[in-house]
Image (cartoon, rainbow, N blue to C red):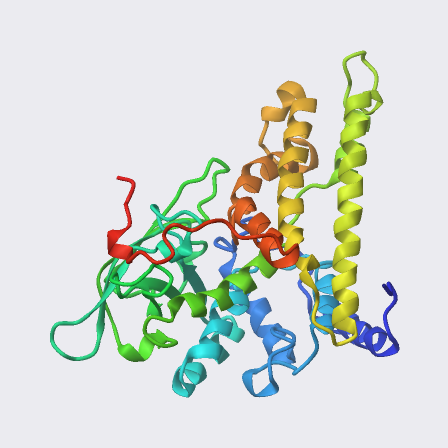
Length: 408
């Protein structure tokens, strides 16, 4: 493992630093991490990055990228994070949806959507989860049926839930049930849709944090052209895997207030004996565990970066990031609020320590443990695909979807 930049990487880092110093915003715009209350600033920053080739560095030059390497993307992200940039509402679109479109759509569709998405002119969302399916994407019950007029169009009816950014998205990709007579993984088809169509209704979900980043989305006789289909009819599961793998990479590195911030607050907080809470042996033991976990994650990511730097494909170690970081965020936030006692209930950024960062972690972490695959699903993936353990017995493997019990 090499922690130092190669000469080429050092030169690229200096290039990025110089560009950011000249072009990055000087003050943070908006406070919504989903980007809903600062779209203007976010779109302006995205357009500026796109014009310089920094929006999607690894994309081919003909699509607006630099044709660069993954390690260059890592370098830019690390340097960009040092500046007060606005929220990024484009991550789902550019990291998950548009790559799926680029892989499976026809040339006309790619030309229509890739450029505007890259420049921040249009925002995309991912419509997978359903109320009755949970993390079982293949259990989708949203129907797409051929229009009876023989036009070849599809009519979509159903509901999706927990859709991030749907309230300000222009387009989305949706997984639908097109054949209920085959097992659940085989009867799915994916489409791209216009989120402004009258057949689409978006209802924001009010969260306990006060935000509304997630949404319910209802489809009522939404008509889409067959040209909006991504991949072959019935191949929606294969197409969705491309999106899901990108999603797990995207959410794997998310972090909240960390152990160092906790230790600093603990040093200033009175404990049971009137002294610093940091003198509590049980608390110090937790701190040691969090530190070891954080260092393990950091070096695991460094291992991934080293592989990228060498032009290699990272190994399965990148699969564990979300499991560790999401659980740690939740445990650390809960412990901080308990330590702060009555002050832990204060969620006012002007009054709570660390601008209510611990309270934010407590309210956000449960969602992070679901996004991109639940802890349980990711543990199964690691057990089966990394450790080579036998898979769970699936009694529904060969049952037509229409014959599966609904649980209702």
